[in-house]
Picture: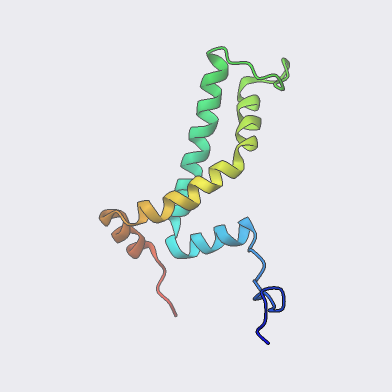
Length: 112
């Protein structure tokens, strides 16, 4: 008798690592490049929201009493998963640029 698809056990999959664990792995592999890209994307996001709010964009959930910078920071926290996804996608791509790859090699700590 041949086993059917319901008779065979599915292979056990390891639980997906948390975002913090994946970010730490990215930092170990790419060093300060991952941190720099993270902060660059963060400040671009906050700056973009700040500019949008200054130019008159009003979100429905933005409190009228909140300062523009505080509202921009709060809005940037809403899009945090997208920012981290951009960091995870862009870091390996930027790390392939030749002068960036050389910089990563120079900044990498020698193993003991």
